[in-house]
Image (cartoon, rainbow, N blue to C red; front, side, top):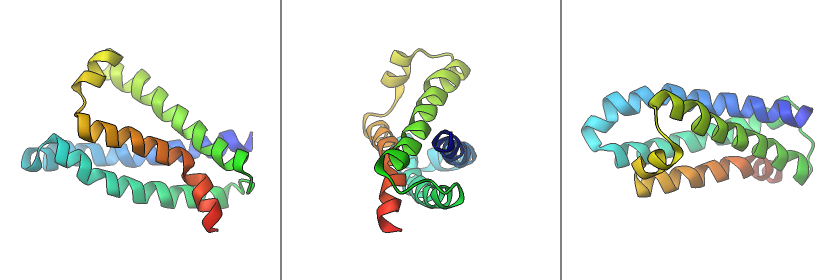
Length: 130
């Protein structure tokens, strides 16, 4: 239960940061630099957020220093992120998964999904640093 709670908090904080950065990216950065560059410029900020949040959550929730616990926390957050992305966001945009994947920029979209994988393993990586 502790791992589920930690993963859910991790998801909420990372998703919340992305939710706050989204309008800034869409209304300020995209018109100046284009969609691809705007998304790529946002990713380092999100990476820093993910590192700090992962580190804070593993300490705050006292997630055990085992691979299964730390990776479990990350995988819970990863699964919730995909559910939010493909369940909630697509419904708001009125798109199917196929339409959404075709709509995404091939470069920034690929990097985005790689960053989601990084998000899943970050709790384990910060464990090795702590």
